[in-house]
Length: 324
Image (cartoon, rainbow, N blue to C red; front, side, top):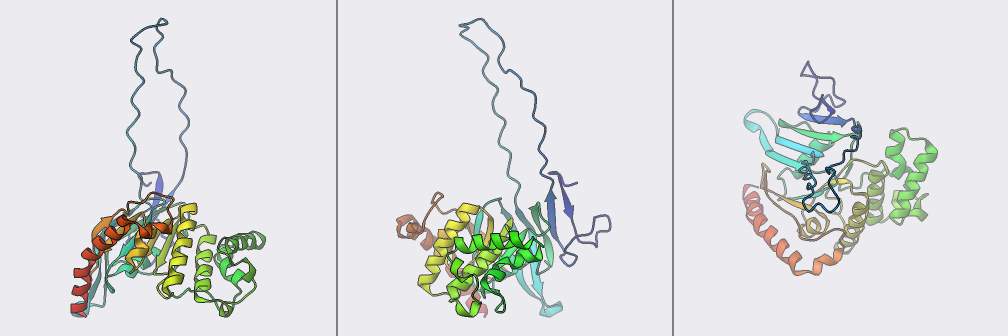
C-alpha cells in the first residue's frame, strides 16, 4: 500500500510489484488514491463546566498544524538521454519537480533543453533513462495532452473530434455527444459541430483540440506550446480564453512555452530550465491573484517579472546557440 492510502504501480521488472498499465515506462508510477473518508469523530465538548461568570474558562485547543499537500505530479532525479555509448546525448535532467493539485505550472527555457521531453515522459510517451516520475490519480488514464500541431483528425467532424477521447473511454454515445456539445458551446464553436477541420482556421482548430482534451475531464492537462503556430493577436485571444477556462475547471496543468508573457499570464508558477541537458534553475510566482484577466499585461509588475525572467534566460539561450 502507498503510504498515503493508494497503490503504487511500477515497472514489471520489479518482480515484487503488481504489473503496471504502462509496461514500457521505466520509472513512471501511477498512484491510485482510494479517496476513503475517515469516520467522523464523536463530538467532544472542549470546555469544562464552570459556574456562570467564571473569569478564567479553559481556552479552546489549538487547531492542528496544516498538513502538506501531496503533489499531483512528482519527479525525482528524472533524466533522459538519446543514443548509446559515446554518441549518447543527454537531453534532460536531472530534474526534481512537484506540481500541486489544481496548479497551473509553466515551463520556459531555450530550444532543445528538454521541455517537451519532460512533458512526453509525463504523458507516458517516453521512458526516462534515470529517476522516476509519479502521478497521483484516481483514474488509470489521468492525463490529456495538447500538441503544437492540433492533433485533430481531418476525416472527423468537429463534434466527433471533441468526442474522440470519450469514445475511447466507451462513454455512452448520448452522454458523449452531450459533453462534447457542452464544450463546443464553451469555446464558441457550437455552430461548427458538423463541420470538418478543413473549414476551420488555425485558432478554431486549436480550440477543438483544447475542447477534446477537457471533455474527458483529465486530472492533469499537458500542453506542449499549443499556441506556437498562431499569429500574435490570435495567440493573445486564446491565452485569455484558456485562462478563463482553467480558472473555472482548476485542472492541474503543465504548460510548455517559449513565451515569457504567456507563462506569466497563465501560470501560478513559472519554472525556468537551463540549456541542454535541461534542469530547473529558478522558479517565480507571478504576483497576481486569481481570478485574473489578461489586463495584467499592462501592469508594472508584469513588465518587471518578464524582464527578470529574460535576464535568467539570456545566458542559457546564448549558451545553447553556441553549442548548436
